[in-house]
Length: 224
Image (cartoon, rainbow, N blue to C red; front, side, top):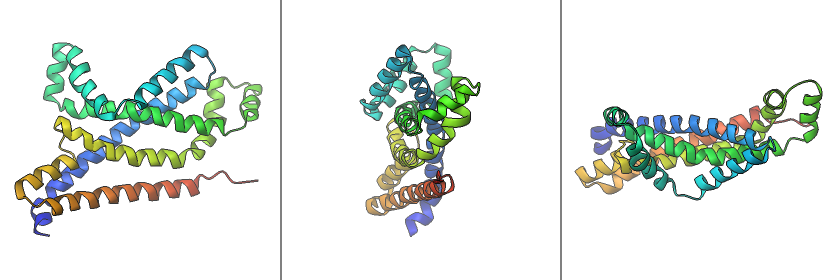
């Protein structure tokens, strides 16, 4: 308890940064995933193959490699002014969020696509017959139902994303795992330090799972 009393604010700061990193990454992942899923469902061969290539690339490369590629590789290709700005404005946070968001965007795309495929084609055809274009029919008719179906895998992916943010410590992002390692090295209280971070990670995961369970009940497609 003395460890928590002395370093509690530091753990909370690390947790806050973890949640911020997860939130930014998740917004990007959902945006990218939704866009990819809709593009792939257009049945345009070129778009379909581009989406497939992107999804397979992201899913078959470890997330830590993606983070290193963006931070050490892509950042070095930017103009010097942009590099200086990134170095002065916590670029490690944004590059980590970008890498994690794109990585999970591939999984979100597949989750949403599975939800879209579960909706009978007749609904899309009926919407098109009423004068809606492809994207209009998707937005107004098909996608709302597909997202309801995809709630469970999307929430599961969000939990995985939160845990993946711990890799950002490799770039010096002071998220929860970084703080835990720092406190453990200063106090030599290894079990207590990692016990606290474990409890915080579990609390976040359970909160997300509870939210997912509520959303699943709230937006469940009822049988008629």
